[in-house]
Length: 204
Image (cartoon, rainbow, N blue to C red; front, side):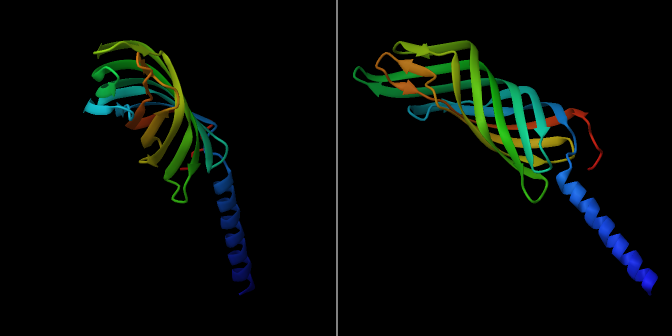
């Protein structure tokens, strides 16, 4: 009986120590992956005539602090294609834009208790490298913009992730001759796969 009690206590202590190590140890030091998906964007300050779903793709990097907290960053090709109407002193105006951008979000991620889902929040910077526009009155299209990013990420397999993000610009992307400003709001859904795991412990 004594041997069984000792064996049971040893088993419990081993499992407890293993669990403590599991919840505090990092699975890896850094992960670098590729991602692709679709997105759409609007200017909330204008009446929306048409919204198009456009492709997005890029690189994704994740750096864990522990098994709950992470820092993430991305470098993505992004496209904002929308048609809008707005009114000013001259009457109703139309504006159709097709903006090609590089978007760089940086955010913190928190792992939920399911250990398969994370919430993310941070900011982003965009650089517009090409645009096509069709407007009824003069507008200024700015190359740089920045704003906030929030989202939800679901782990499908140990290296495959499904991510939904909302990006809201805090700076005006477009300014009309009537001093009307447009800030973009975008939503994206993407799949990412970790191609490289640095310092992977094989804990999954």
